[in-house]
Amino acid sequence: MIAARRFLVGLIVVATLVGVIALQRSRPVHSVSAEFSRLGQPTMPFVPKGQFVTSAWFCAGVPVGGPQLGGSAVVANPSEVALTGKITIFTDADGVASVGTPFEVPARETKVFDLAKLQPKGSFVSAMVEIYGGGGFVEQRADSASGSAVSSCSNSTSSTWYFADGYTVDGSKEQLVITNPFPSDAIVNIREATATESRQPAILQSLEVKANSVLVVSQDLLAKRELELAVTVSSTRGRVVVGRAQEYITSAGRAGFTMTLGAPSLGEQFYFADGEVAPNVIERYSIYNGSDTDAVVNVAFLGLDPASGFVNPDPITVAAGKVASLIAGAAGVPAGRHGAVFSTETAGSIVVERAITRQTGDTLATTVVMGSPPSFASTRWSMAIGTDLAIDNVLVVLNATGSEGTVTVKTLGAGGEVPVPGMEAIALPAGGVITIGVSDPTALGHPLVVESTQRIFVERLLARNPNLRGRSGSFALPG
Image 1 (cartoon, helix red, strand yellow):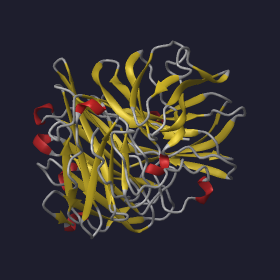
Image 2: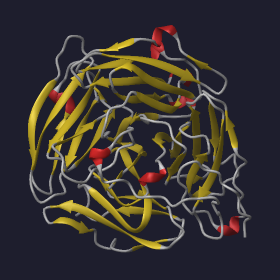
Image 3: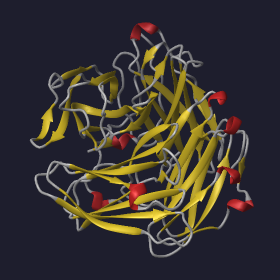
């Protein structure tokens, strides 16, 4: 039996693998709040429930204006009545107004909006989806020649956004996509951080984001040749939405394309369902301390075989305003699948991102995912964008409790939410991690819902592109 490691946390801690890791001084994880109307401090995206005058979703943005560039916003309606609303597309093209169009999504159906067709001008466009009366949920897919990337859209704007895993080595390109969906101009400042310094270049201060538009901060303005480049985007006027586009160059050890939302606030604890140690996999975590106080961060890898004898790494001290990293294989994590949780007692101090580079044949594919806060441990997770292809390991599920349970995968169609044949009650070990393949024709190309008898975290690994090897990772939406 592995000796228990004291795990100090500041907010909420989940009991993990029974008999393997005991997280002491813990408090129960609470499922995600269903009261969207009560949101104060911005949080990561989730599926709101209840009655609203209007609910709004803000998408990170997609590249346009070139071959194989584009993307879509997808609105899923799981209810028994039609949803109506309006989608507004913003662009970074100078002097080009936003484009708005009303829509209706029939009961138990989805609607896909081709953003580049709605607004072809500019280098990036983004979307705001307003649903009258609330209901439904929204995600986006961004496309490039290096692959596609799926991400949930945000429930709210924020005055601050954080990224931990920027990567600008050997020509790899990073761009910040800042959307101002409001009728007044916004002003933002950008701070960069590495393992050794924190800086605020003058050229990245007091940037104007015009009303109802997108501002793209290009790689030319960001630090070059950095293995880990964290970023804080903070507004001195107005609230914005910030996404990050990264295109990796194979020679640098990463390859592919990612487009993700930042974290709208710092926290104390972040969970990951997916993780893998294998000869062809590099799993790297970047921990950004965006506060002005040093943070001691504890790491626990979850779902491991007790017989492995693995002991979690020593705590990591992350200096104020700096970044630290951890590579799972170098930390001695045994081969196979696992989850992870990063925790600190320094309140409101960190965000954590995970980059996994997997090699299939002679092809590398890198995907980057922001950790999920503990309050999102939920018995239900929803996806507007499921898999179009029959492939293994599409879903990765982490049991956030110390009790065994089951998982049911459902598809959304004309008959409502229907369990996928053979996926009605998949065994879920206490504190364990399982992967689920989706191959039934009734589930392909449809929204998916994962329900469990225990609180869980759910990531998905979608094909980057039907013509490209590799996967693009992303969290589903809790709720």
